[in-house]
Image (cartoon, rainbow, N blue to C red):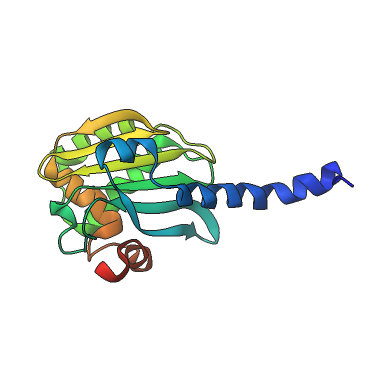
Length: 184
């Protein structure tokens, strides 16, 4: 016997969550495979804010695991699979606020970095993925659903941006520990 329409609609959120979590078990996404051949999952966690699931995050590395002390000198990819719709400009604003918590950001940098992030982060809907590729000493490259959106050629930007998740000064220490695992 097939489920009624109401039963199907009731089951839908759980099925969508299962699909999002299963996505990370199949290996790295295509943009990560291209940039980091042989990449493997180092850590992952679901990020919630005020009880709402915002995104699932995964840290992809090639070679040895990275740690909070050496993340800025190592190539890696950070993937965020969104569970809800968010405005790209708000993602950029929030990211800049979090970067300022990690270290000082001067006003000129602030404007340049906010503009770069606004270009890199389009509006997202549930199921969309934003991936950041850390390029040590060079900066960051961003992707939306495997398509490149923006390169930011600034190593200090990359250190602070990825520090939101990986720095010892991360505002989310539990998320940081889950991503770094034993290497934290």
